[in-house]
Image (tube, rainbow, N blue to C red; front, top):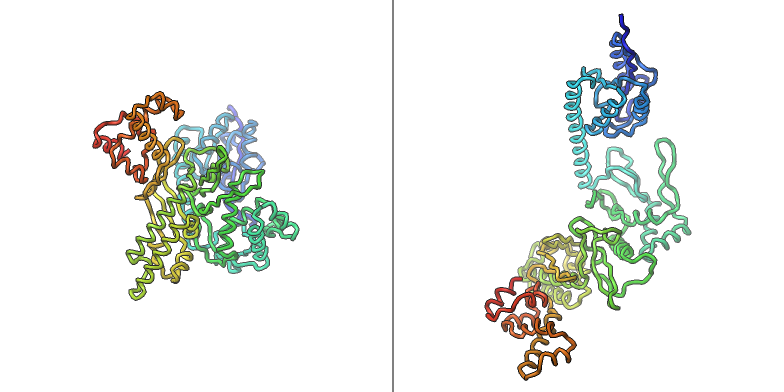
Length: 553
């Protein structure tokens, strides 16, 4: 009688959590006992259990980075195993992609895989098909469970609950384990307040780091369950930046790119927080290795974000001795290129927002929509104060930043949230009495490219006069008048320093329809109209045709 070849079998067991592993007979032992009994029942097939155990306690099935599994795979690669036995297939992996990789690796070494409670093995094609189906459901269950956990965390954070993680300096967990709240640690809160005040005074992380070390300020001390102590060290710049940008200190809970009102007590006053954030953003925009401070203030610093949630950071460039300010997506400043990033001209953006805010305030005032509950007896005086506030914002270009709390710019719209404290103070009314529609506004917003220039078009705003268009129109009239007086074109070219083709291409602007010329001089021309677009066409002699051609470009 021919003896069956020996099939060297290894048992693999896994448990996701560490709960119960300290018991004399735990889940890993139960899995191992069931698998060993199955191997014993296959002794007539030559199956033999190897003495080594491969147990992963407290490891998720969503990854292959498990110590016992890696030892098992090393044994398989060495050709010392012929069969892997598990209690259920999800003990080995819950990922269909990972399972495919494992099967390929087992096949390459001539090793098979058996689940003792599901009565199949990978030595047959039907076993592989069944295994793929079961793993698909296992992965589906894992993903659904992950989604439920993520949704629960998001919902809890929206309610202001603390959902775990590294405790921030200044707070401890609530003594009641059933309450997911933070409680203020007074001693640590003093350290946090000192760091914020230091940055508010110094405006430089390196200087704050030096001063904090001089004062002996240290990070939070945390004792792990193993008894190991972490933290309690001097601050580094990276730690300081993380601390200074953590919204938990103003009583908010962060979830991804959003923050929600928390159920814990704030440590830092809103005014101090706003000043520190503005200085951090401004510091991030400064070129490294330089200490110069921009001479033009960016009044919207720290207030605007673009559609991805990335802050719009003020920056500037020098060309031909002139300084040009911009608001740029922070990821473009941090490094690299991104075609979706924004680069908006600073003065134009500030003027646009100023006009939008002024128009919104005047509209709300004229509609008596300033207060949530209008008071007829004081309506006239409130209207007067609101109109005066709008006039003041319109007359002082740098003032609008104080009235904007935050804003988001999308591809086709602009959303602004006005600062209730600034408006209430200007109108001498309580903040809680302001109408919600007064503080939140949405406006159409688009950009038009004109060469290297970006033109901002927001709603029904009136475009600013175009000095290039106005100068070219005036020159066209001068050249046309000179030709009528008998001056030769070559003489005009010689006296002006322009070429004859240059003059020929532009002299026709003197014969534009009168209303188009008036619009250019008054700054009321279509926002996209430029000299390049005017000279691109053979100028029609019919004024109506000119209006049709240029009024909608």
